[in-house]
Image (cartoon, rainbow, N blue to C red):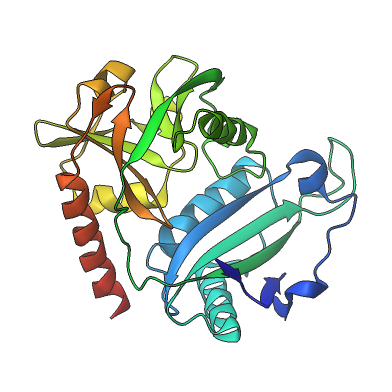
Length: 282
């Protein structure tokens, strides 16, 4: 992905080269912030409404002071302006990064925030399914507590980093994350779904997974999805497994341990997602 030459910083468009992070930046020191990632097609951001809702929820959880003009329309206009400035008219990845203003120790001196919006060029005009299935396994070195502030996209992501390193060291594609009740809840950067006897299942939010925007979009176009606390045995007995996030859409899983899976539901689902997205962006 090519990063844009311009970014949005606190509402203003500036050269990406001009941005600098001070040593007392609270995100750098304490992980005191959160972020959102989303996919743009041309200047359209079909899932932005979900990202904005989750963003506001996260800001409230982290006790940020939200300005009255920090609205959906404000963010949408800034994203569109950035896409035009960087001339990423096919597709791009958008990242919104928010962190509490500098100074203070664990106790901040204020609850106001700075924010950055950046984007990265993508080539595909729509979501495309991976041609080679992923191989995954269950990561159990560390487990995720079920806490509200761990269900947002926090700037502190050590569990997912360590899980991704663990997967790479084992020459597999991704790690499946357990909660402290030993239930599988997600992958390192994706929500997880599985199919059994033509029924699609996914772990409930109450089990501690991130409230993914693509997960929510899929729920809307497939309201028959079942929410079920998920174990390794559920996945090993499944017919299919797939992972979802806002940038890739859907990725099908080929194998977990010795089990191998099909991808017919994944193919049908990504076609349905692209069809719905085209209605929004056309």
